[in-house]
Length: 339
Image (tube, rainbow, N blue to C red):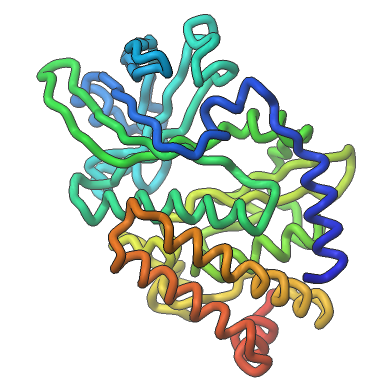
């Protein structure tokens, strides 16, 4: 790995200490089993531009074996997955009452994004697991990333008591990420990628290429959060929402019409041009992470072996590209953006 990227990684790691109150939910990598009870009909049919919150409750078994029940509010969220023509089950947003969650794993959290399967089938369960894994892989290449919490989730209808069991995951709230990072979110569009932290942006862009993801834009703040770690310093871009990537390969995922690819499985580099030295450094950096990335996929036993094997091959194809001078020049360097 190059000295500059090592320096970037080391300095960022020092800049981003974890806060004790956040340890309970996101620092523990074990699966969290919980039940969320709400009126299915009310919530799943309320998918307009501004869906309202609906009363609900969340329950789990604590470390002493006692069942904890928390009153919450819940609503549909998102854009694509909120559309009933696309998903029968939208992603959800949970809102907590601050006083009710004190001393619980949710202490200090106001809202949580909850990612659930788009449809009720084994295939869509696996898509959720693959998207969760994509977040975990990004944390391997960047010390500044959204944390995620894997869930064994039961949704229970308040009206009928019918249940739906599934894998799902929570995404760390942006305000928690910002506090943990001692940074401020920049909610401003039209910031050019070249005005962002150069090394962090290059690593992020290469990761998006690695997982075959083009559904993001720094300028539009589309599936990107910007954090400013020091006043007036170039912000760091943090990606999220990977379900349109080739790595996840959702049936509904299509590349944008203006891109020269016909499938999300086909990679297209959406990053900006860099010097030969900068490109070579980031290629070497990702090659150095190959074993760790593939080991993480290999040991993610929530996915069937066949799926894990396919994901490893997809990453192998990326490594094969960046190891070859001719392939990386043809597929990445010559395709970089200058606009």
